[in-house]
Amino acid sequence: FSTAAALDEPIKPPVSVEHTQLLINGQFVDAVSGKTFPTLDPRTGEVIAHVAEGDAEDINIAVAAARKAFDEGPWPRMTAYERQRIILRFADLVEKHNDEIAALETWDNGKPYEQSAKIEIPMFVRLMRYYAGWADKIHGMTVPADGPLHVQTLHEPIGVAGQIIPWNFPLLMYAWKVGPALACGNSIVLKTAEQTPLSALYVSKLLHEAGVPSGVMNVVSGFGPTAGAALCSHMGVDKLAFTGSTETGKVILELAAKSNLKPVTLELGGKSPFIVCEDADVDQAAELAHFALFFNQGQCCCAGSRTYVHEKVYDEFVEKASALAMKRSVGDPFKEGMQQGPQIDQDQFNKILGYIKSGVESGANLETGGDRLGGKGYYIKPTVFSGVQDNMAIAKEEIFGPVQSILKYKDLDEVIRRANNTRFGLAAGVFTQNIDTANTLMRALRVGTVWINCFDTFDAAIPFGGYKMSGNGREKGEYSLKNYLQVKAVVTPLKNP
Ligand code: ADP
Image (tube, rainbow, N blue to C red; front, side, top):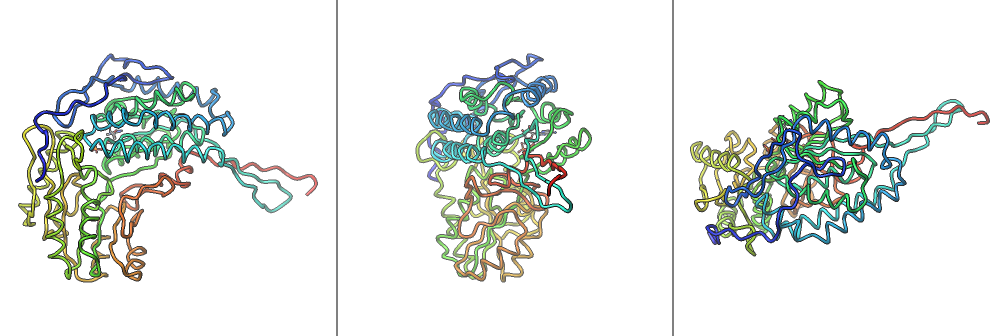
């Protein structure tokens, strides 16, 4: 490994933590209980800051503020153009503070600083500008009806949106949810992930500086079974959007059903196939498959975590994939040139090492990696298994770490059957130059996104979401607006048809 760079002496992050309280009704406030919880630096496991710990009482206050802002406030009644200008100003402010926000994201999450600063924060800005663009383009229809009737539909904001996000892309998940909700004129109570509460507080302050009225954007840090569950069960919340594990998704749907039947969009787990066809350029295929799995420390719901390789190119592919994993630079995410930082926390770290052990025990070939890196923090060596069989846990369950599983196949029908034989259906990668093969796979795979000769392409306008137990609903793109709008039909008899 070309690694272990500065693992012992963590680099001092070029930012300080300014906001640790809850953001409710335009004010930073302590939790009602006065409780806090520590957010940890994944490089060391040491405390970055103590953050206010919201619970049911804080959720009640935040929902009341959001309710008032929606029912009485100016936001849903403002002109669409005014809302658009506030969202655009917000994007400008985030862009201006790009490097500080990126540093905060990397400190709290462990992802490479260059990834935060050059990809994720700019993408956040792009997403906000995209949604600002929609704000004044949302409108209903006139509908031809039988009888002398004038019929129209109004597309109205749905109300108070409860949003629960995970820790792997704290700010991008914020943008995917907050962007469309704001553009449509809703108010929001956002529950961030307990591992990564910091960046959402920072940018939400900027959103207020940009002119969003108090009560429209509320951020409650805290834990899932307390603050998160209270938000899901709240009778004053009109809609829920969740990204996280499939298990938690089931709980959330149940809480929504048991309270007020609020509609729920879910973006859940995956076990995405990446299919390398027999005509593949093996160098390019290995590089793309490597990126598809290892990007963001392997902590992507859509990670290409089942690498199916045609038997004709299999041996060469395994050799190249292993060489790439060995070359991957792992170390302090603040150090220039690092491709991989630590995993998010001790739980994930243990879970990933457990899967690696299970891979070895079930008879897969460990080509490289397989262990932690260094003695401190949550670093794991890029790991490659070949000879993986479909029934092994590493081929069936979401590992959410830097562990590539390579499986061999013989023909297209077989790989389609095997790729679809999973409870998940989030995404798939296809690597081929043959248009017929690409067309066959694209139509046969039961997934929400097929990337052909590319992977993890996440433009603002491209819808993203899952088939099967990977969730329901779509985020990003025009499709995402539907999640935050009600349709009202208005019927008037016509005196003079
Ligand atoms: P992970 O295992 O990756 O942490 P989770 O699905 O548990 O994924 O977490 C994603 C988000 O869901 C986090 O913000 C977490 O706090 C929240 N969460 C976890 N459990 C619950 C729950 N019972 N009710 C509501 N939210 C929850």
